[in-house]
Image (tube, rainbow, N blue to C red; front, side, top):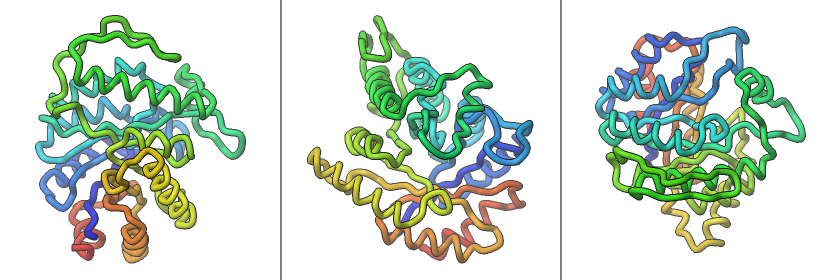
Length: 292
């Protein structure tokens, strides 16, 4: 199987001009199918007072300057924007981009029983609240229903456990019929159940964030969740987000090959900062071309 490839520019400690440079180069490079940002307000690494550009604002600016790339946030936090507001933002961006948006979604910051949790500081700084993981998944399920109805229905009410809408109307609709494809990022059992039910694309981070034993287990669990609901697993694209090594591209290629052997059909190559000149040309030569 030959994978398709995207790239990610994390807008942390990186000037807008550098991100724009990479995206414009990628837009002219057919081997790159899509490009991605993230959805955080504070740096997760490096100096805590460093620059971070807001994801949806930046994505809109880049959408207006590109013509070919599919694009999105890897992934949008469901804890930051009310679902209907997010649906309006996404509809607008799909129109601006000419129908190129992929709707990347995740549960967002949740309370974790163990380990470091950078969301605590970030959410406190921006007046956001953490919720238990189960509630985060339930809220995401309601968001997905709201988005799809906003993208396909003229007017509707919604009365869920967490969200209520009265006579929602959303125009213009996204250009893509039925709305943008839905990518969901996650790895927990409850998230994989939701992914099997609703997602067009599943995304998970590769090494060092997730080792291959865990990736193998999660792939099997997702296949089992698809079988449970009678879904053909082949209808669900599997996407791996992988940090690139400029110093050892062979190591990155080896990780990509193991991921492809495991069934991942799409690889998002995440560029470490600072971005070298002609970074996309380097990605194609060192990482992508050997797979084609």
